Amino acid sequence: METIIVQLPGPSRPGEVGAAKPELLHMGPGDVADFGRGVPGGRDVSIVLPDPGISRRAGRLEAAEDYWRLSNFSRDTAYAVENLEGAGEYITVAPGRLGAPVPFEFSRVVLPALSGTAEFKVFAPQHAYLDERSAPGAGELTVHPYALDATAKYFLVLVALCEPRLRDPSDGTLPGAGDIADRLRPLESCRGLTRSAVNYHIDYLAFAKLRLDVGDEHRADGNARTGAKRARLASLALRFGLVREEHLALLPSRRRPVPQASGA
Image (cartoon, rainbow, N blue to C red; front, side, top):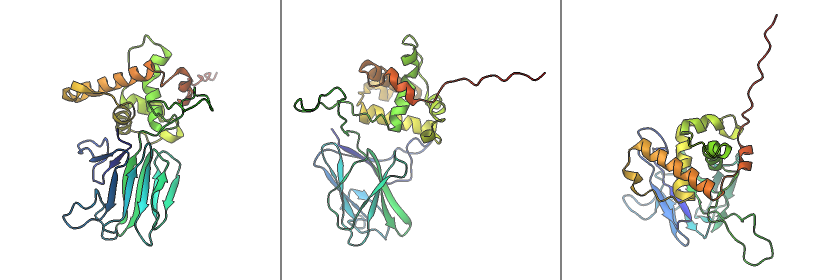
């Protein structure tokens, strides 16, 4: 099972219409990947950042059990690791620092470059969270097999997806990506949420967090595959209590505006 997933630099963006899917590098515990400019035409680094202002071998990623470390091989340049789910939160990895642990689940590694900055994204889907039912001091702690962060945006997407069935178990309808984006957009953290971004979070939930076995769904048409994926996500989340009624409080209020009385 991979510890981290690296989205390699490229022109395409997740969910962008007509764009190829970004290339991904999957790394398990103990795997390492160097990043930098590399030698011309060579494969000496796994993550290529083609800018003349970046060292040929600028640094290294190392996957641990449920997080990752970053080493900075530069002698005079610091690197930044941004929390993509935070409000401007980041850590700085000093020149020459080896094995700096990164605590974020969604990260962007940023290096200064002649063209401005060079960057790539790192996802750590196996971050472990203590099972709330575990009793401290009772031996080895139990870690939930589905490591979901209730403060992450993907969790809001999952709650919005499950909302109809949480409110009425007999309701078999599921909201589409556009419906979920509209439902969450009143939240400050979701002002710019788009349908493409929702689909990206659904893919992340399906393949990285909940590890769905899609099987023959890959051969179905796009709409059918997406619908089946949403249905299986909702079914698994509700079946194992990953999303519960109390999580509905995370969603925007559904209060209807009070009609104003007409003037005389």
